[in-house]
Length: 199
Image (cartoon, rainbow, N blue to C red):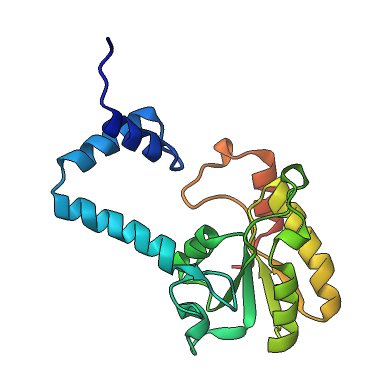
């Protein structure tokens, strides 16, 4: 009869549902949890429950927050006339870590994807339009990924927002820092050249 331990197997199965976690990683994490002191495991479980129960989306930008309005939208030092539009909170965190954007954000909660039945009504596009009118926004920076869905979403938004009298820009896409030209694909090189800036 094969070795069985239902409680451990259940934990492994639950961990495997996390992104990037396969059977081996699930097993490694489960055994790590088993070896940790009870207080640490309880703290982890409490943190997970707290996030699920207390974190919601900001009523202004739709970023995750544990308040009605997120810390970025509450920050008076931010340029409220410049809104960077991203697909999700991961993209916001990536741009924030660069410390280059001094404006505010708008999280779409996804990208247009007809294959997955995600249309404009599934995203926070209407709320973005209302926000532009209300806050008299001067510039929208479209920061969607260079994928078919990201490109389609950026094109759709540009067509929708330009008639509102707001400047619409797209982040430059190109070569990563430290990347080699001979490893880059043609589209990346083309975008790097067309998106060049004066030095």
